[in-house]
Image (spheres, protein in one colour):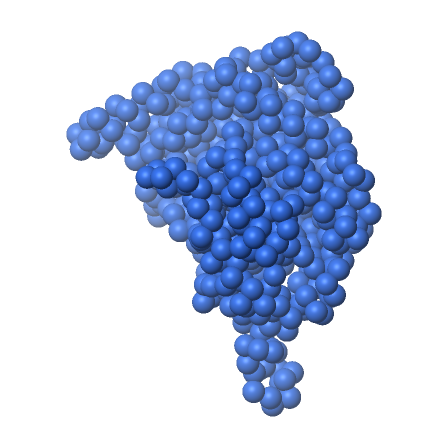
Length: 594
Ligand code: GLN
């Protein structure tokens, strides 16, 4: 097993996660099995109890693990399936050490950060690195470990010390450190400054780790003289200084790393059996990146949510929309609409905001209501669903987005004026969304229906089923507590709101479609977690196709993207050919359970 530790210098939030995932992408393109571990040095056990405002979205894994959104980057970039243990937090490590102490496993010794906590980190990393992530039982060959935060943070110290020891435990030829640092270019002088990088490398060395690669993040490409300077002052060779400037899209980052000869470097340094050139899968990334730059035709999506002040709160939804827009050759334009601003009271309270919000909604090609918790903003989401239903605009409801669409339909079509969810008001005879526990209620953070579950289609006509290539069963990831009340389903269905996908026992409503509407689809699960740049999620693809007016032709042509819809220049290279015959079926076959 080869270990690549990615640390950060100067400040966080400069794309360490994307660089780490891009290294993985590059190695995968060379045919190497890669896994990854994200370390978050906070004390929380997991991300389950985070407010989306704190850390952005909570990412959900197949096994129901609620983890940091960086694991989403790894899964999307490297097309792997990670497990809850691939996310380490200080809380998890201490919990395991303390429970061992309680069991008497330390035989009466004083339990200390060094060696007990640092040993626990090393054991955890060694154990988890071996878990297969590619859907087969092959042990990965390389494990990329991203240490959150920056070098010097108090919280990260025990981890840095653990890796200082770890490099000897696994031997030098099996361990490599990439240090991602910032090279700012202050406006006053316009010069690229290396001093912050020098200090942070010095700090890293002081803690006993020597960088094998210094990745300089900068807004513009780095000049040779600056590269030279980093090399001189940070005690690394010129070719060990890698530059990653701001790119048009994240899809360019693996390409940028390949251009700077990272493959021969890994081959030499880690003794990996790598070809000198990456495989075809990297040319697909080039095609994606070029396509991203080329697409000018906008598809406008109104994302009506409540956490819109922080775009990271909906990062997977945004990525899933992007994957679908890219494959259709459209430029995604997301308008984040604060659902509270669509509510009636806002007309009085803040008419400018109210009208702006409605303008964004009405000016869109499609309306998406994503997941969420709590009553705030619900009425605005109901309004958005109503507007999309009545005006026959494409609508995609995700989790809470399904629940509000059902509430809206109950109120305005079935005349159940008090229709609501028991999450928001106490139950009455018109409650249409109820708590349906499947879990063991316990501590906070563990009471939801989480992770991969099966959905069975109950009819062939369903558009969603066609998008999923006519499979009978799909498996997607869940994170919710409430569901549509099964006793009311007959009434809904009698009026055109069909629950075409359900749990095996038929009691849990998973996929909803409205008859006679171009695309009014909602799902109780979160398909965005399984969307990949080259394999868009079917419900999202259907939504984008409906928004650009291509859904019907897509379905009648057997769910294939025509060359024209897929490529604006009409030219077909080998790689393009592959993407062009991109078939939703193939894309999601892996997600289907048979
Ligand atoms: N709050 C809703 C529930 O718990 C929806 C959850 C979600 O959208 N992820 O069921």
